[in-house]
Length: 268
Image (tube, rainbow, N blue to C red; front, side, top):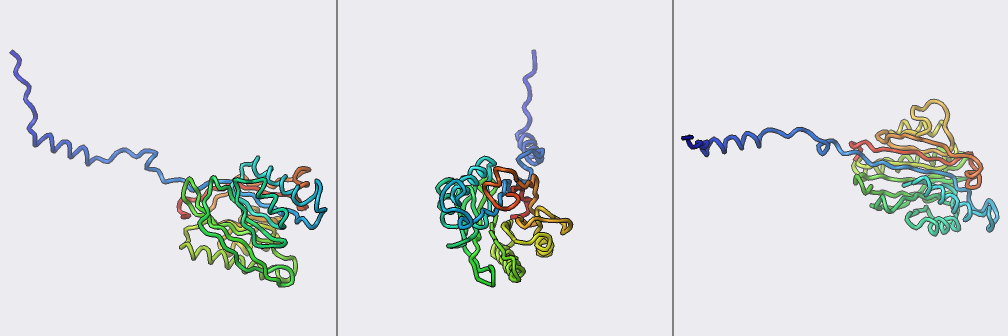
């Protein structure tokens, strides 16, 4: 006759369960550090409408509609434009309903834009900069939150003069970068883009301010006048000037530009 199986004392069962609960689980993908925001940034001089005929295929609004098609085909999420006028702003907003465009004001101005399906607007405002002859202009700032990562990004668009006020304009813009960082306790990635009307000198001054030009990361070599400056924690890949006949129907500059980026998880 088989003896009945003896059960372990209840006290031992409870002790074994406690030991198993105390053993840490093996690390898995869920425990990995979350990735920062990723996206594609676009910047261009949009060839202000007053430079050409008010109507027709070469008009400012028609060029802007071509620019919007290029942006949509390239899956651009963020961008900055220099030399945009009222008719071009209207054309952009009508042609790109999923994007929001924030401009500096009336007249020949600048703007930042973003895809509203990927980013939420946290704050927008304008600050005073310098244009030709020391004329004061308003420049736009948009602080956005990335849907996927909740990271914060600040966009600033510029168009600096080619005269002696150029250095003052850049100095004021770099001061605003510091203001944005301070306002968000450093938990924001800053992007400054547009037509600086200077190349190497902008890249070097930006480097000293804790920014890098995606065209010249170490203040060596050459850089175009249309640049993107980013925080050092922003990793750039796929920087690409776009040129050719199609782009020549959008801008009177040698190229328009795009760059894919990834934010370091420690940025925000």
